[in-house]
Image (cartoon, rainbow over all chains, first blue to last red; front, side, top):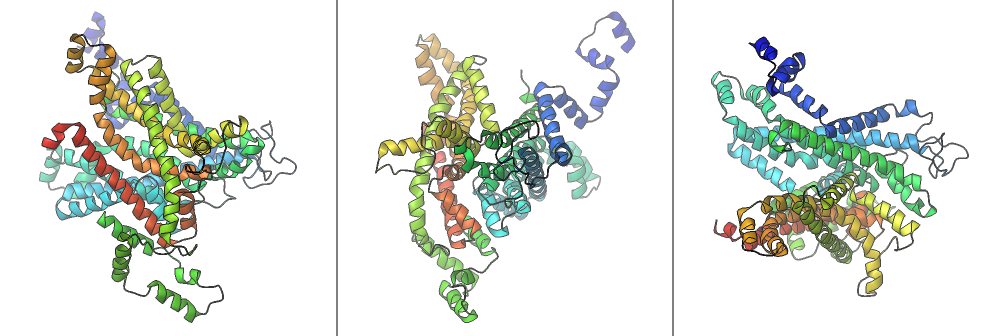
Amino acid sequence: MDLLIRESGRVDDMNQDLSQGRLYEWRHSSQAFDVAYRVVSERRGQLALFILLMLVLGAIFATIISPYHYSEQIRGVRLIPPSWGHPFGTDHLNRDMFVRTLYGLRISLAVSCGAVTVGALIGVMSGYIAGYFGGWLEIVIMRILDTMLAFPGILTAIAVLAILGTGLKEVSLAIGIGAIPVFGRLARGQLLQEKNRDYALAAESLGANPARIVLRHIAINTLPPLLVQAALFMSSAVIAEASLNFLGMGASPPIPTIGILLSEARPWLTSGAWWFILFPTLMLSLLLIALNFLADALLEATNPYARNK
Amino acid sequence: MFISSIVIFGLVRAIPGDPASMMAPEDASIEEIETVREDLGLNDPLLSQYVNWLADALRGDFGRSYIKNLPVLDLLRSAVVPTLELAVCGYIFAFLVGLPIGILAGLKPGGPADYFATFFTISTLGIPNFILGLLLLWLVGVQLHWLPISGRVSVTEDPVQAARFLILPTIAVGSSLASVMARFVRASMQEVMNQDYVRTARSKGLRETDVVLRHALRNALIPLITVAALQVGALITGAIVVEVVFSRPGFGSLIVGAVTGRDYVMIQAMLGVFVGVFTLANMMADIAYGFVDPRIRQG
């Protein structure tokens, strides 16, 4: 039959997919592969992944790319503009801005990944528990989440930092805690939609225990919006991390986070040291734009309604 | 609101470090520290501490800052005007910039205004408010010498100078909100322009401006109220960070000092105020919603 259609020369959309054979099979073997394929085959997704890849590689291999250490004070290069030896210039303490910026990027990535992990794990789990069991447990959990939601923006993080003290791990945890209610509410809503679908009821009637039903059967179907949310939140975590460090509530100065670099650059603006502020900003902006593009691409890949008509 | 007050109180009590030993002089003996602690009421049971704090707070007495040893209320009062004026200006800026861009982009998708809106959105996504503040500082303040770069002048003293000091921070605070609004109005506008009543208005022979402003816009703006209210929190936290960038006095410097100095009376009071403002904004949005769209009131 397949052969017949192909020989007859009427190649419509479906058959084009069929004729691609293995790619088609691979794409449709799992939703995850399909989403990955859609992200990669779209322009914004490609751009986002490319920028992210470059930034991540730069952050990981910062110490190999640059011969300097982030706190190393190099003789005779105080506040010099970008040159071949120091592509991003040097700062007021004779340190190489290139390695410091890359290092800051590394910290931004690590802290925001940590925050996403904390926020998504705790949030999603509490949302699942609330949604699946219902009753008083749901009321209690949702009340707690609503209360947390009353603290706007990075204020939750500031409140948590006031307790934990300042530091990078604390910043990561604090930002993550701020994200719990968003993930929690989203996960609960998704779970409630899926809970009474036939497949979930079937699993239940087969005697599977709640943990297995939720994690094995329902979780995979509630994943797409959570994934989009995670990518979106990652970008706000990067901003929050930079802001908190800028305010001096994060790491202490020798460690170069983007926020600290910017707050160090602040008093030197008047002296015309533009590279001091420009490069950290540039790196951060690239990261943020890439994350937002990725979130858009993920949304379009996972949600057919969001695709451009 | 009530639950938040318990949370704030509990949270802040969990802060490690003993405020009594920080308040007392450095060479104080253990007995002296104990007296200070007794004075502060730190030895009372937690519940009565909470009740006392809440009762005082509702009467406007937030206690004394441990570090500055001044009444918290006075500190808050001195900070509220600068922060509020910045936040309000940022809000107005966001409306003035976001709405026209959104409307124009929504009327002609793919037109020049739409491209500008996209460009505007992407740049505000990539540049967080405090970095925009730094960039403005550098470009307009340092390179062009157009505007002063740091500090604040009270409006009552010298309105012109005050405005000059406010311009850059306002842009920094308001831009991201403006882009959120522009994006939202654009989508909303596009949807509304395809509605039947817009076609009816056109077929009545109304001028296009009348159609847009009187029929389409009013309906397009309804969902914006929720967005505008939800963004109040982001706006205030934005103002806090931007204040630090421009070395303006206000909540920003206050909260940074309080957190790094573990001034828990101060933190308590400020969190309370912020949550209050945020809750109020949401309530006002609900009321405004019913006002603009009568269907909600009946429904």
